[in-house]
Length: 200
View 1: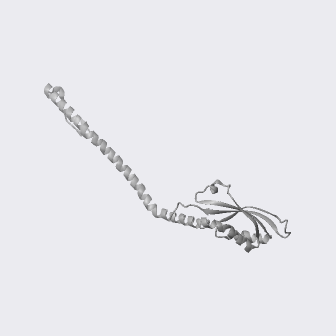
View 2: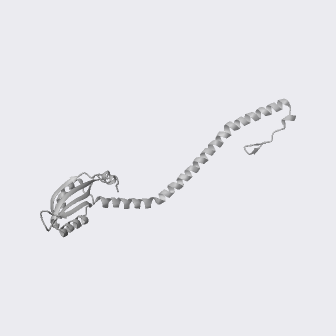
View 3: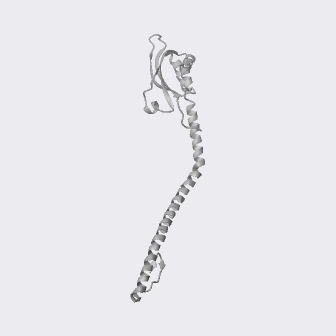
């Protein structure tokens, strides 16, 4: 007879004395109960521990891969943070909002374009732009007067400016006041830095 892979030779109880057979049967029962109480839980624990070790080895392999990739990930993070820094440099700071109209007026004067009026409006365009947590879009609507080549110079100066300035809408007509000038309505979209969650 095999118990847990161990050969156990038991006497043939058919030919044994009834008292001896009863004693052997009771002893065998006690031994079997002892095995069940002592060995089976240990086998379960052994299986449980082996399973945990297998899981830990798997996690260890994954951790090793992540550790190997860490330098590459850090370099990517530095590159992303650098890109964010470069882009944020193109946004206006809170204290520069008052300077924005003045700066545009200077560019217009340099170009030979006259600003007749300027108004700030709430941007209601693309939701991704309007509801971004890192910046606030600023929409300016300008009425300008100037010759075609002067206006071209003004647009060129705006596009080459270090800050991010986008021309969103434009209409050009012949000026009613000056025959050699254009009446221009221009919408300018720029951005105000309001928050930052990525740090280097």
